[in-house]
Image (tube, rainbow, N blue to C red; front, top):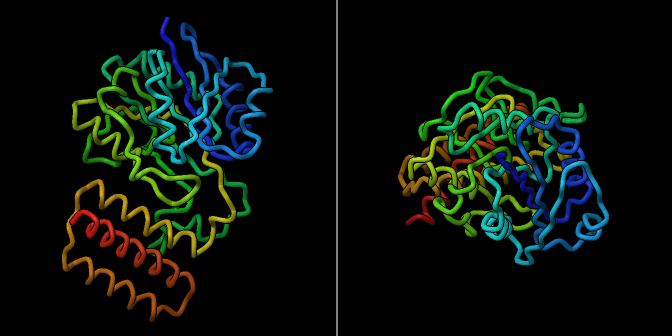
Length: 299
């Protein structure tokens, strides 16, 4: 009988972790699979560990603690300890659809050639978000402060030249973890800062080694919407950090066009009469400066 571990790394988010675990317990269970949950608490200083010790749920739950701050440290400690056939990654600020676990297992059954799976990540909107979060016009904000990944309704193989998913909704056949190696501790976030892209770099490394990645649309997770992130200041900082990380993992080098692009966005932001347009160009300016920042680090 095939086995699946659902892995959650968490840092001081006990209320959100509770929602994530409750959503997993509500999932439909696939026939012919054994499923369990493993939580890796990363440098937690709240009541997470005490709460986990008391918790009882539908699915078997094991807990470990990585004292070194950093999500990559937590992942690098957790993965070698998993002996099950497959691992599904769930972030501690996600909740999963009731069909999520069944979708993961059915996709692995249907695609024995797939080494990795990815699914949809959708914002868990509650109606309190600002209007600009839903704008799809020419002055939309991207990247949004809430992750989103959606390649449509059809199962399809994802090649390296397409959008590479992050680790929030990823599943893998366990032997590939050792082949790919550790997550980058340089790229990974520490605590809840804006660092990231360690998961994208890890997936790209696997694809470069010949792993096959398949998108399974029924693997659906919903990302918590933090109202504190729905501000211009946050999306500007996020755009800078995201672009810097992407430039690092893609090996981009400094070039004159980066300065020209930044100057253009700066001029557009300075001359925009509406707050809507100005916000858009400020985010684009931050992304351009982040690209330059990452390129300079590569040099």
